[in-house]
Image (cartoon, rainbow, N blue to C red; front, side, top):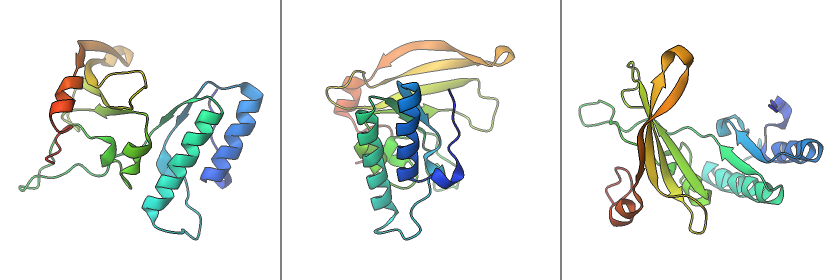
Length: 178
């Protein structure tokens, strides 16, 4: 069941109330919240945007635990970093690259990054990267590559899962130089 949340309810509190009512009626087991950017902060924002994001993510996390939902929160990155020559660097983005706050990384139990190489070209493959798995949660860090099959609008696995757990433990994650 897909629901569009009415504009007047596009706040953390409004979404929470809507989810509780919807869950009471339909007993949901998962939620895809897309996009995070559609939420409206309170008219008088106490603290900065980072505090708003941290509080909102914490409320959403507690709500999804309370309702026993598997929640997918779709958020978009900041602009891709540019090289000295002004060209965009192509690298897999992490949860810390999401526009607004590093709290998207801090609060997530599991994080997935979708990477399309050669954006703007006729790229026929997509990489799906597990960039975070909180200790005690199922999953492993790694990636899978998919080919896009244009005639049927679907994807097929191109390469098997590449387990990168030990690589990530030894090296900085995805292009970070710290």
